[in-house]
Amino acid sequence: MKRYILSITLIGLTFLVVFLGGIMSLTQGTAVDLQTLNSANKLYEAGHYTEAAAVYEQLIIQGSRDSILYYNLGNSYYQQDDLGRAILNYERAAQLAPRDQDIQANLSLARSQVVDAYPVVPAGPFDSLAKITSSWLTLNETAIITLFFWFALSFLVLVWRLLQPGKLHKSVRNTALVVLLLFVVVSLSLGSRIIGEHNQPEGIIVVPIVTVSSSPNEQHPTEVQLYSGTEVNLLETNGDWIRFSVPGETLEGWLPLDAVEMIAQSTQNDGIRL
Image 1 (tube, rainbow, N blue to C red):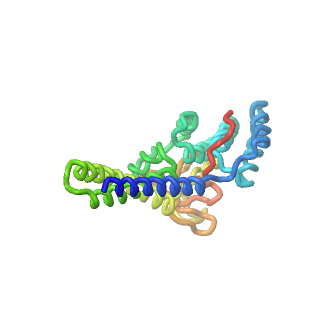
Image 2 (image 1 turned 90 degrees about the vertical axis):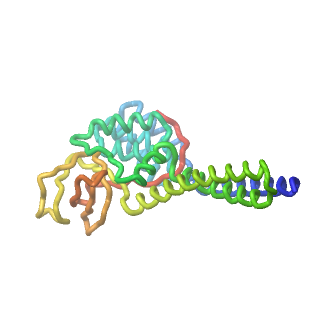
Image 3 (image 1 turned 45 degrees about the vertical axis):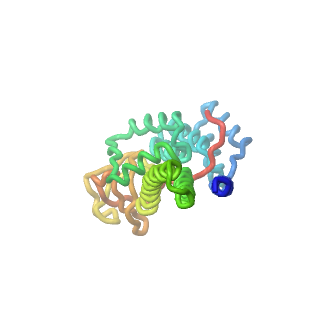
C-alpha cells in the first residue's frame, strides 16, 4: 500500500509541475526590444522626457509588455507634470509587479498630488479581498495558486481514501481541510478580481480637468470637476461618453470618452530600470 501511495504521489507531483509550467509559459508576453529600450532610457537621462515617452509608447504599440517599461514611461510622464498618464502607467506596472517597492512608491507619490482626489475605498468584503490579493499577486499568479490548491486538495482526498484509519489517515485529513480553506479563500479572491475587471474596469482621468455631466452630452454639465489622475470605474458607454463611478461609488456621472484611459492588462516583467 505504501509503495502504491508513493507511486501516486510521484505521478501527481510530476503532473502538477508540468501543468503549472505550461500555465506559466502561456502567461508570458512579448519580450522588450532592449536596444530600443536603452535608447529611450538615454533620452530620459538626458532630460528629453517627451521623446523618451514617445519611444516607450512605440514599444508598447509594437506589443511589448513589461513592468519596467510601464514604470519608465510613468516616470517620463511624471517629469512632464502629466499626473494622469504617470499614474496610468504606474498602475499598469503595478499589475505586472505588485511587490515592486519602487513602483508602489512612485504610484503613491503621484496619487498624493492629484487635486481633490477621491480615496480608493473597497466596495465590499469581496472587493477588499481582491484589493489585498492584488497588492501581492498578479491575476495570473492568483490563478496559478488557485489551480495548485485544487490539485493539492484532489490529491490529498485521493490519498485519504486509500489509507487505512490511523494517525497518517488523520493527518492527511487535517491537511486536506487546511488546503480546502486556502482553496476557498484564493478562489473567492480570483473570482472577485475577474468579475471586477470585466464589469467595472478601472480607468484614469488623463486630461488636466474635465466637467462631469448628468447625461451623455455636454448640455447637462454639473458643478463637479475631476482632475488629471483621478481613478474611476467604467459602468457603461454611450457613443463618445462613458458613465463612471469613483471607487466607493460616492460619485457617478458621465464623462467624454477621450478624457479617460483604461488600465490595460499586460504580462511581461523583464527590463532595465531607470
